[in-house]
Image (cartoon, rainbow, N blue to C red; front, top):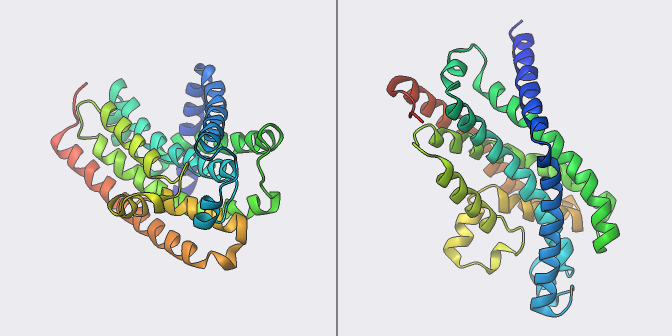
Amino acid sequence: MVVTEELRALYGAAVKSWRIFLSYRLWMISDIMLGFFFVGQALLIGIGLTGQRNSPALQRITGYSDYLTFAVLGFMVLGFGLTFLSGFVWSVVDELYAGTLEYSFASPMRRITFFLGNVLVRILLSFLYMAVYAPLFILIFGVHINPLGFLRGLPVLLIGTVGMIGLGMTAAGIVLYLKDPGPFINILEMLVFALSGAMYPVSILPKPLQLLANAMPYAPTSEAVRKVVAFGYSNALGELGYLILISLVYSISGYLAYRWSERQARILGLKSY
């Protein structure tokens, strides 16, 4: 009975999120165009810096000679990961602005059900975007991605997703205490973008930034996905082991951090808007 009720609540939250998404019809177009702008920018940067798409230096560091293929795989991970960060955080922010979060707190629905219901549509859209991007990137930009290798990378992406969900819940807990969470979200998203390893290997960063990048789930996910896509699971055991570890840590700590923040918000009250 409890499981059935939670599934109904999950469905209701997902339907609500889908209706909101449909009310802003340009969102899907802007999301898809973002991918093409990212890849086009990566192509121009790669050619501008090296004079060609293939870089011997990049191959020595990452195993990828084609910078564009390297960047496309990073974009797939980054776009999927930001789905959870933005989805979890904005699901709280939107209800705070609307003044309905107190009612959500009072409902018997579990908080994880509330969050997953809000991001479920985003997850499905992310897979849809990947299905659109992959053939078009290959056709238009000549990206060299082995379809079997790409499919091998999807389970790795899902492992990293566990850690990204944990980080999203932590950020959502912080948002409860902020008068205006907009600047915090913007800074956090820029930090994630800079340290995700999407457009460059994190090994070229200064050591403190390398440690910070590897302490977040995005860069380890990008590195593991790239390694598996190019060389298979057997050659990426170290990356996979670390990714599993950091995903478990973030999932547990994120859940505990948000539950603590929510309890404090119930006691102290929410910030007014």
